[in-house]
Image (cartoon, rainbow, N blue to C red):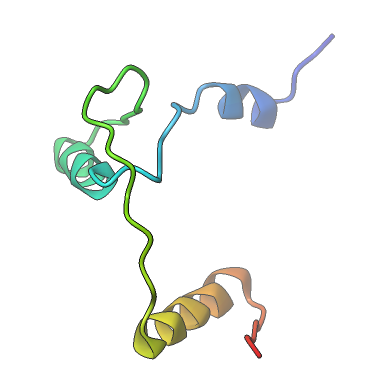
Length: 76
């Protein structure tokens, strides 16, 4: 059985916990060090608090979505 390059690359990606309050800090440190990071075994995990987006933040996200995926999305 042959595994495609795409699947083997996906298997090499580290697990990341986007719900962690410290995620952005860890991501910035990894970016500055030019390294890949993962959250496996991290003892600093703290669940992020739920936040409401302002209309400006939501508008920015929708604009980014359109730029990245070349499609429009709307919220009614």
